[in-house]
Image (cartoon, rainbow over all chains, first blue to last red; front, side):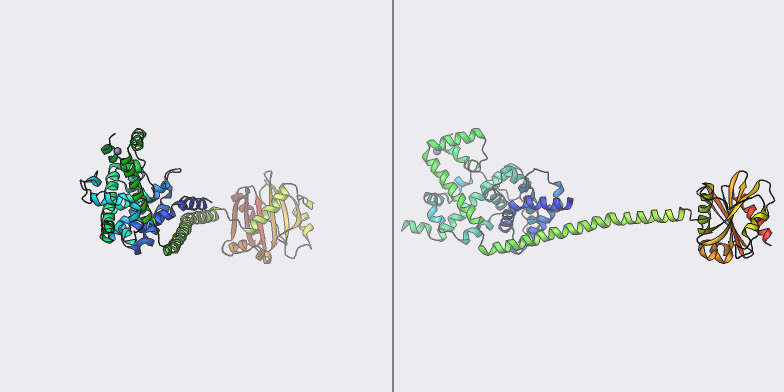
Length: 192
Length: 262
Ligand SMILES: [Zn+2]
């Protein structure tokens, strides 16, 4: 009876976040062949530690922590050893204002839809040009909708670091978007 | 807040991470400043577009995802099964060992009484509790021998009683495990004492007594519901005594039987 309820409770809590966990894992793991193993390892180790989960607590943040740690270990296997605290440059805040492609970005902003309808897989791949921590922070915020505090909990980093990493991730993604726009002749189109 | 200050808060504002006061100030500025408002809307659009790009999954991965989840669920079930088996082993083995030990200790410590002693005691108890009365009430050994004359298929002889404290009370014929016995009732200093005599061939009905008597001349058993038991085999017959009386006294009586038998 107790066994049944533990398993059932866990699976019930897991159900609404399955999609997110899978997607996050795919978006952040270095080697796509590791997706299944990493997810399985993460979920099972979360299940084994389910007793430590505070009833009524934030299950999403709790389980993402297991996934993030597992992915970190899997990436380490491939020599992708960036932790969530490293690669902190000093130009985090306000990077949008100072980055060299600002003018291009301004151009995109004038009519974002015109570029956005042209995006393809290449933009998606640009996500992997972000560091692991930038990618994790960005995905947890934008896609998973976690608060800064929750992200800090998941990645076990200070909220300040979450903010700077997020800001940096956004700036870099916009930079990649500019590169992409240039590549597909977005600005040439307009000038013609 | 001016435009520069407001734009510093763009991420926090879009992420709903600004405190209430700052949120209000930014909102007020945005409703008044068209340039900032447009910028915020466009940023939101870009952010939304990036988010949707990264959250898109190729249709083929949905089946793949389901397969992955199914395998994860089965791993959890397997883990649960193994864990329960583990718990079962963890607790069941010590429990089984404990029970076995208890049973063994009980068996070895529990007084294992001689079968004959138990039967004799049962009959003795019936007599003491007045459920069984003598067929003949007499102090005379001759009367007893006369009573049994022709009733038994073995030569009955009574123990030589030299002590005054033991007195014959009566006798009856009865059965212990379907073995026909001569049952003699005595009184030893006011304490009832039963003596059973039967053909030695019938000893096979009492395997543990038979086994004991092969190696011991006199066998004894004590503490059968507070009674003691002594038995001896001699002259083609077996005699056994049951009483509250102490073992040495019982042995003396039985020895008298043995002497008489010679
Ligand atoms: Zn403004």
